[in-house]
Length: 114
Length: 115
Image (cartoon, rainbow over all chains, first blue to last red; front, top):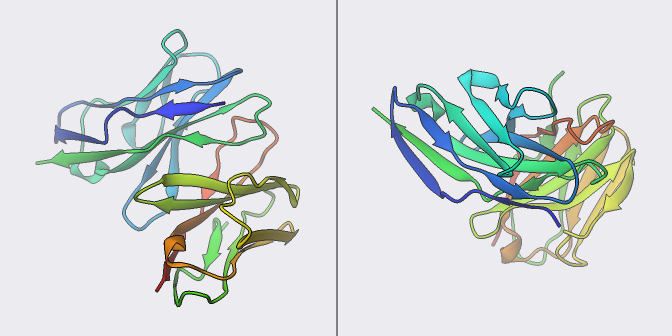
C-alpha cells in the first residue's frame, strides 16, 4: 500500500525567505510524486510533478521540488516566499500500474508573513 | 476549456434527505475521481472511473453513497439518506489517464452541510 507523509502541519516563513515543505512517501513500484496547492474555498491546483530525468523539477509560481530516490522524498521549495504563497499544500504520489490513483498526504499549511 | 465543473457549489439539506452532486469533467479526459475533504479526515478518495466504468469504490463510506457515470461528460454522486456526518467538501477531478504520471484537474468543489 502507498502512503505519503507530510510531517509538518504548518510551516511559517517570512516573506523573502526561502521555504521548504517536506514530503516523504512509501510505495511499491516506480513512484511519480506530485505537489498540489489549495487556496481557501478552492479546489486543488497542480503545481509540479516528477517523471524522470533531472531530480530538480521546476513548476508554477517559482516553486521547485527535489526528487530523492534513496530517501523517498520530494520536498517542495521556493527561494523567496511571497505572502500570496500562503495556502494548503498537498504532496501526492502515484505508481506505475497503480491504476492512476493518487495517494495524498495530510497537507501542510504554509503561512508567509510580512 | 472551462475546467472541471461541479454543481451545486453549496448544498444545505436536512438529515434524511437525498443529495445529488454533479460533475462535468474536462472534455477528452477519460478518468474521473470523487474525493471528500474534511478537517478530521483530510482528503479521501471515494471512487474513480476509467472510461465511464467504476474501477475502485473502496473509499465509498457505506451503502448510502452511490456514484454513476452514464457518459464521458457527466457523473453524479448521490447520498441517500444523508446524515450530519456527511457534511464535507466534495471534489470531482478528471485526468487523461494514458499514464500514471498525468496530473488530475480538480473542480471547485461542492460544500455540503447536512443539518
